[in-house]
Length: 243
Image (cartoon, rainbow, N blue to C red):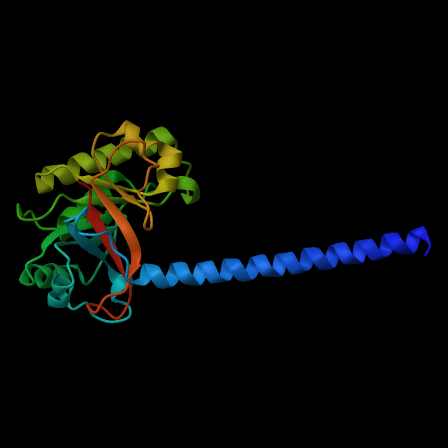
C-alpha cells in the first residue's frame, strides 16, 4: 500500500477515535449533570452539623405559585429572608404579605435589598426604608451584592462603588438598628474585594460545598439554590447559618 494511502487511513482512524472518545465523554458529562440535578433536588446539609436552616423568598420563587408557609416551617425552615427592594425604585409587591405569613408560621424574618452600583446610595436607602418597617423583631437586613457597575450609563470606579455601598449600609442600619449582612456574590467580590474593605457579616453562595471566595468566615450560606419541597410548587433557595 502506498505511503500516502496509509497516512490517509491513519488520519481517518484517528478522527474516528477522537469522535468516539468525545461522544463517550459527552454521555458521561450528561449523566453526571443529571445525577447532580437529581440529588440536589432534595439535598440540604444535615441538621447535626447545621442546625439552623431557612430560605430566601422573592418574586421569582412565587412565579410557579404561592409558598405554603406552615408547610415550609414543617419541612425545617427556621427563618426566611424575603426580597424587599431593588435599586432605587424596585419593590417586591409580595413582601408585606410574605412578611406577615412567615411570622404567622412562626419563622424569624429578614429583608433583602438588591443593591445597584449604578444608582445613588441615598435613593436606594430611601426605597428600602420606605418599604421595610423599623421593627426590632426583624433579622439583620441583607444586601444582595450581585450587579457589577459594568453597564452603568456613566462610569463608576471601584472606589466609588465601595464608598456608596458604605453610605447605603450606614443609612439602612440607622433605620433598622442592626448591622447589615452582605450577601456577596463571587463576581462582585472578585471585582471590588468587599470582604476585605467592609467589616460586616457575610452571606455567601455555593451549591453543596462550602464557599471560600471571601477569604474569611461567613455567617449565612446559600447551600442549595434549587431545593424541592412540599412547601412550594417551584424550587427554593435554601440557606444555612454557619456554626
